[in-house]
Image (cartoon, rainbow, N blue to C red; front, side, top):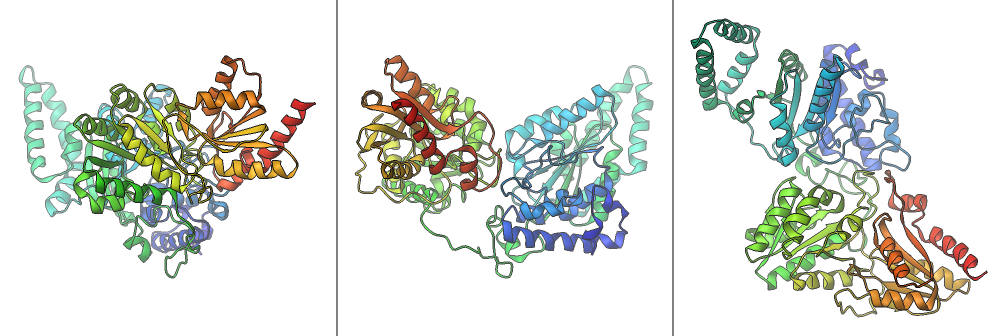
Amino acid sequence: MYLEKIEKENDIKKLEKEEWEPLAEEIRDFLIEKISVNGGHLASNLGVVELTMAIHLAFDLPQDKIIWDVGHQSYTHKILTGRKEGFDTLRKFKGMSGFPKRKESVCDVFDTGHSSTSISAGLGFVEARKLTKENYRVVSVIGDGALTGGIAYEALNNAAQAKSNFIIVLNDNTMSISRNVGGMSEYLNSLRTADAYYGLKTGVENSLKKVPVIGERAIQHLKKTKSGIKQLFLPGMLFEDMGITYLGPVDGHNISKLIRVFQEAKRLNHAVLIHVMTTKGKGYYPAERYPSRFHGAEPFVIETGKPKKEKKGRTYTEAFSNAVCKLADAEESIVAITAAMPDGTGLKRFQKLFPNRFFDVGIAEEHAVIFAAGLAAGGLKLVFAVYSSFLQRAYDQIIHDVCLQNLPVVFAIDRAGLVGSDGETHQGIFDLSFLSGIPGMTIMAPKNYQEFEVLLQFAFELNRPVAIRYPRGNAYEKLNEFPVNPELGKGEILYDESEIVLFAVGSMVETAVEVRKRLKEVGYQCSLVNARFVKPFDEALVRTMGKEHALFVTLEEGILNGGFGERIRRYLSECSIETRVINVGIDDDFVEHGSVEELKREIGLDAESIYHRIVAEYVSVIS
């Protein structure tokens, strides 16, 4: 009923005040219904319905700029900007993104997906506004979890120098920052932002500045006295001491109060942080009770909150969880680190079994890597479990603090390759390229579940920097008839025949098995090699296979530019081996959202596409 009135941005302003609460309920029902079908980020979005409505009521879009940190909580924003019809295609191939996208709407002013970036981006808009002499408001919305990221503090440090209005909304769902309570806190907050107080403070300062010699000294004395009093009562003084006005805490589900504090914040000619308290998953009991489970939810039954599809097969994340716990039980020097992802990376069980050897550093990948390096230099063996796309944030630390010192840190890289519905910001397609160029780094990729467990143990035994990458989803359970006896830098010949050789990395071994089957069905002789090691790769085996086959095909679920296949092609050329080479991988482009199967077909990484490409190439080779 009320939701039907929202067709474009600012339509919410046409509603009466008594219609706000029913609209919030309709939005929650809408989100629960749509996400139960398509999946998506549920708990975070349910928690910011009123906050988003208040922002849209207090500001003018698209003139004013709203930047959502990470952006997984922007669903209500999408609804209020006329995109509710797009939720039928949410996170689907060629459909609406689950994150803000500039190409999707003029009301999405900055693409996001990774954490802790909104304050930096917002400050950029603030300075751009000044230089271009435009007139608009800038609001950066950041969660308490994202505030654990060091980038956010770097941005706050600079935001304190802003000489014009900049509003930072801290969405605190009590998952990280402690709740501020007490009447004195609320009283001093309202006093500090009241017209009388703000006007009096400005007037006094202006008057004192006119007094020769002692004027400035008196101002500083008053500021110190005022700050000292507030320090006794306001936990938000961390921000105040940095030069950022702190307002809050504010009930994030009270639209009227939120609008009032936004209007107060607009009057300040510098950076202001509004501390908003919300409940993650609000309005849907399963999401309120289990917010982590409904952070990134698969399609579920609304009545129970249980997934619609039963889980089938074991995942590589489970393989990692089981293997690392088994190894840690036998070796007391093994320590595990995660960056706010104990569930997602499979370290939750490790945390329960070995609490003293487990560290969750929050959303701070750069710190996590240096911290791991320090622990390793102190005589321990480290594993840092992290998603591929998030490891990018710590590239300098991998080079400078781990590899340069040849420290025994194992990077367990989950979600390596295509991850699907989260799209460009989360596809783990760059790690092979950016890690391969680092001296001293060993890179491994298992072909199946069984090999993964053996390679993880081997990684710890190497006592050096090692990256072991594995994809999202179910692990490959076949090819177990081949014993796993890893030797550093040595590949594994699975099938040895003439004509064509498939040299596959990790997850692409499964695809290569299907490609080989199709080639055999039409009469082609095809060898299959499990590369196992991306760096160092098996030079002797590459030379041998290159000489014995007319067509050499590399397969990797990663970007081709700087990847495994490119290095193999260069090596064969350096060895003057004239075999024809096909590099199968991902072209120099970002990959949008959709199911992994759809994306592989789109970019030519599925068995059918690879088969046709090989046949066409081989026909030209022998003709």
